[in-house]
Length: 278
Image (cartoon, rainbow, N blue to C red; front, side, top):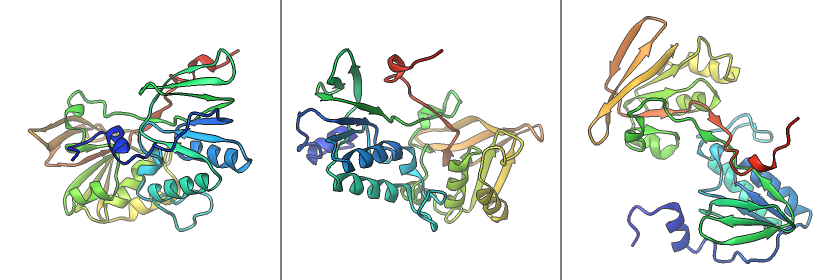
């Protein structure tokens, strides 16, 4: 029995990577988000021997989205996890292999085939490498926030998190599409969603269709020029304090669930040695 296992421990227990051989690949893709899986589909469909290595679970940032409506080919929308599952099935149909819960720590490009070294010590050789490591979530820029990560402060808004705050007041932080999608999704079951936006308007960073839904929703309240200054609680988040610069007020609310969608940045560690400038 595994108690609170890591993704790597769970993958090992389920033998998810047991059939991955050590032969030289034509294409090795690092990252199994939409870009990485698309690269795998295109490569494998052309008959290239393809391996995808993902450090956690497939889907990337999009995989945690409750509903994606502006993705080509899905006019009624679909969840990020459904999109990931379909992409995996399509890549595997053409013969691509997927290795999960394995992190790449080094790429030796001194000669071909290139060598990729994993944190576990495993090594793979490939004639070409696609780095599709996606984006890293921007953390809530408050000193006490990390203490409540997973205990009231979340960086995903899936059905699992939504069940935790049914009929409760919640906060969504961010002004982009991910924040808008989270607010609309959580408003289905929460008593009230407070959307905290640092800028003066949503039109600078959010699609118009989401803005229209948010402004028309009776259980979503937008707070412009507002940011969290202090979370508080014991074992779990119990309340937060935010500063509303538009009104010059600091507000404390008994909120137990905060969903942060404050943007992201590209993790360029692996790609740094291969970038050309000038």
